[in-house]
Amino acid sequence: MKQAALLMIAAVLVAGGLSGCAMFNRGMMTYTRTTTMGKELVDLKDAKDKGALTDEEYTKAKKAILDGGPVQVEPPCKK
View (spheres, one colour):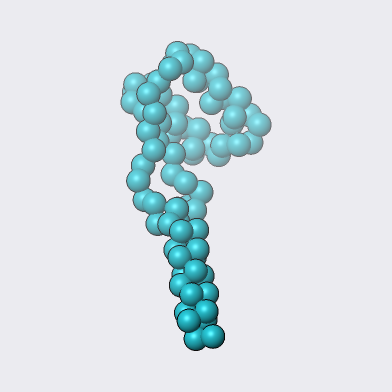
């Protein structure tokens, strides 16, 4: 009985540890541009017009596209 309880506790700890590991992922995600800057700007404007981006997010992403670098987006949980 004692061994079964310890096994159950170990299983819960492992499952909890595995499910929460993404929460501690703090790396930045970048991408390689595979579309034209014009297409990205049009898509960005569409996203803003549909309310998916705030004016601040739109301005920041537009500048990043025009600067030629990858657009880095903060995950919603960091706001």
